[in-house]
Image (cartoon, rainbow, N blue to C red; front, top):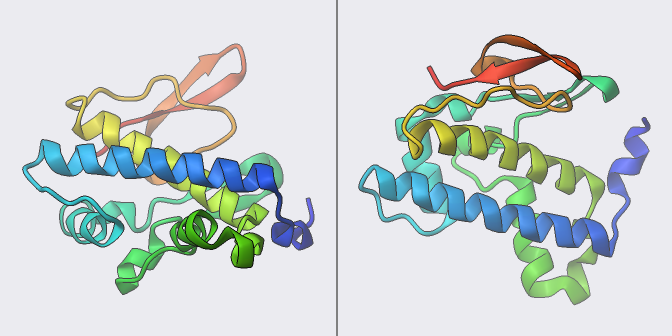
Length: 161
């Protein structure tokens, strides 16, 4: 794995960034609504989630087979929009001049954010149903409750504290 590949961009990356960010938007909107908040945009989600679930800021997705780590919501701790969310908006509204935002780095950040958002969604909206078993590709140690054996080896179980 070479970090120089993080700058490569493509139409497929763009599609995946757009699709993943749309899913993140839908999930965060449902989390907010479940708890009586009517946020419908990134800045509203940022305020709500950091005030109510500050552990989202330090949730770190690891892709151990490539020795990669992502903290996709860390920017929220400085009250700013994450790079991958900005990339989504640039691709969606200004693709003709900002196509380079469809980079592998932004794609990986977006997919990591989607994974974390799904964990929060299932814990909050689906009323504390843990994700069991988890995936063998991603892991988020700060949200892991244990490991379970599967045909793919030991995989983490997730539940918010």
